Amino acid sequence: MNQPEDISLNPEFCSLCGITQEELEKNFDVEIEEGFKYLGMKTKEEYLAKLKTYYNGYHFSEDSISVYNPTSIIKHFISPFAFRPFWSETGTPGFLVDYVKKQPGKLLELENQKIGAESFAKYDKDTLALIPLLYQAGYLTISSYDRESCLYTLNYPNGEVKSSFAKFLACYFGNSDSGDGDNYGAKLIEALKTGNVKEFIEALKIYLQKVDYTLIAKIKEYYFEFAVSNILNMLGVRCKVEVHSALGSVDAVVEFGDYVYIMEFKKDKSVASALKQIEEKGYAIPYKSLKGRNAKKIIKLGVKFSSKKKNVVDWGLR
Image (tube, rainbow, N blue to C red; front, top):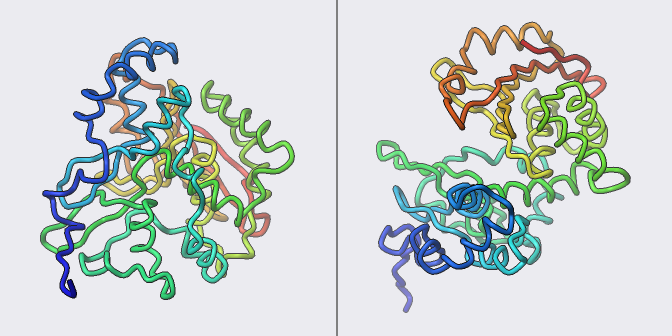
């Protein structure tokens, strides 16, 4: 027993701890039928797509199938049918609290982390190897594998985890749960849904006033970008950051309702330079190809942050 076989990354066992899409549709067909009708959705496929976005996405080996978190998906069905971060409601691991107290800034750069296979076993809570710990705890999962470099890329698995982690970070980097937070959150979401950029920016400013930048040693453009994405994810709006294209990577993309928001952030630089970059790099091109029911109105948004005021001071559209 002193030489156990580690099956953690073995493709043969990649679905051992989760529910596959096939298992979900076969074993929960009654719940799925009830769910999309209960939520007033037009089709079962629409409901399945939302389930997948919010609760699926765990990968436990290279090129493996993705699985659902059993706890979350079952609690969703018996709630009934509420899209809530059930997994995080079971509690926050103590190591995260310890880590945020010691090295808070490092928690802001978790997406697209690359590690080798040997790193997955480094999860001794006393050494606080952050990335392997977050993988073991379920906050990160394998999103891709490069056979040439033998490196795994880790990301948040789904909307549930991203929202949960955003709320956890908000407790330490801001005060978003107090006062009229829910009211401003509703205004921000409604503004995104209706394409009202002015209202969106005004609500965003209120949240940004609460961010505690004293926990970060050096203010970089990325931290403003992170603050915006974290606020949106905390409110349940999926915000993708550093979205790659053929000519570069756009700071943030939000697909919400009938709109796609292409956002470029600049620290102490002009809005014009942000909008020019969106155009020259062709950040909106992938979204122009969406047709029919998937077609959305594209909003190109340039935002200027002030490192002195630590908030939005100007913005513009194109």
